Length: 249
Image 1: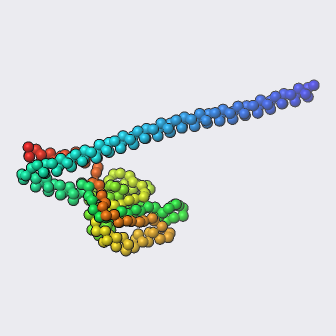
Image 2: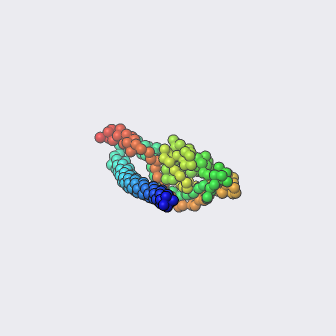
Image 3: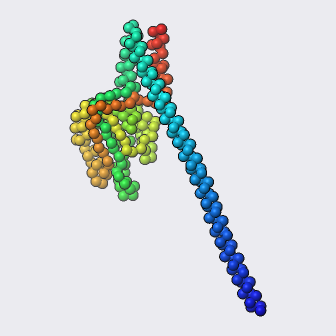
């Protein structure tokens, strides 16, 4: 009888222990599911906020472009309606703005695309298989030496004050972060720039093994390169315009 009682006690103990493990496992699974639900909710909320911010950015960008168009139209109205000495000043200022890259430019040119080696492996591939700031600067200098009149990188206009440098695996241009592929637009003598690119030993080598940098270009007859823009550009334009309009009035 005592032996049977002990077996019963042992059996009950084992059942309780097993039940405890099952309950503990169930609790862990439920807790993990709740945590995942919370995380998913937070991610969805963050994604929604990001979408709203992107929409707001696009709205501001559109308003900004409209304001720049209105400002440009105002320039031409003042020049067309006034025949005094101030017109020469406005024309001179407009010419200076073009040379400084503050206006859109249209003409024949090239569109270059450069990108890291496809499937880049940091353990196997050389560092030269990645596009760095020096690669961009080298191309800009090469194009400038061969008659380039206007250049942009990922639609950011490059001017004398532009700074291009690496931040990790990305590149900063005009205080804006860019990632590959990098699209370089250039207006200038197409044939001369094409010959310079085809004969360039640096990029010829980078396209070969083991680097295998992706590089291509195409000739575009009517290429548009946007004006140089940074926060506060509109205010600066108005500051330039105010002294002239005040003297006209």
